[in-house]
Amino acid sequence: GHFNFSTADQLKAFVEAAAELKSPIMVGTSEGEADFVGWEQAAILVRSYQKDGFTVFLNADHHKSWETTKTAIDAGYDTVLIDASKLPYEDNVALTKKIADYARSVNSVITVEGELGYLRGSSEVQEKVEISPSDYTRPEQAQDFVSRTGVDRLAVVFGNIHGIVTEQEEHLDIGALQKIVQAVPGIPLVLHGASGLPAEEIKMAIQNGVANVHINTELRVAYHDTLHEELEKEPQETTPYKYLKPPFEAMKKMIKEKLELFGSPGKI
Ligand code: G3H
Ligand code: ZN
Image 1 (cartoon, helix red, strand yellow):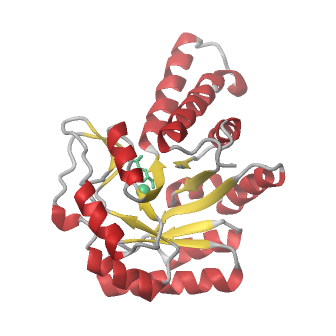
Image 2: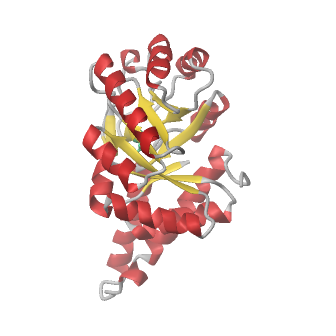
């Protein structure tokens, strides 16, 4: 499981939830989330949990430029997703390889993820996000991309979108995933945009080779709604650690449900 955070209380909830299930966990900051928390600060916070024995890894999620990804690498992130998927293919290969080479030159244990395919939507509630098979990751291109960039994980598109949609159902194309798996059998595949997907489809994706599942929007909605309810219920309460308790507990509950769904508990 990979979960995005932008506050210290969210991170604490994620780490505690995973530890209670004896599950490893990846936590991530997008460029916007990292800009809010601070790259150095996020890295130091996660490092402090690691020192305390928690199995948690920090990912620079969907970092899109050389500058921001280098900032994350230099800050000590455990892993980065260089997402150059919206660039022309050759530019995606070149930037991903440049990042992978740099990352390994400064950190021998860092891992690097690349992204291929057109992943639509964003981590918020949307009405509709049109997607077509032409957006999917092309198996033969995946093979070429992995061998030329040397990435450790690959983010792929096979029906998934970022965010939740209210006027449409989200579905994965497991047949398309199987073709990608056949093309790059040795590489862990990453399912982005798992918010809003039916639980059975996420399970099918894992059974068919997905190794890492990203959730953001469902967490954002739960945090927002629980906080909103609490502030309405206790309008006079001004102590953050009191009114943030219900959203904190909502985060823990959701992380546990998702890790159970992914089959992650008991792995450490
Ligand atoms: O990288 C982040 C995830 O892919 C989040 O997707 O907002 O649809 O859960 P989501
Ligand atoms: Zn994503």
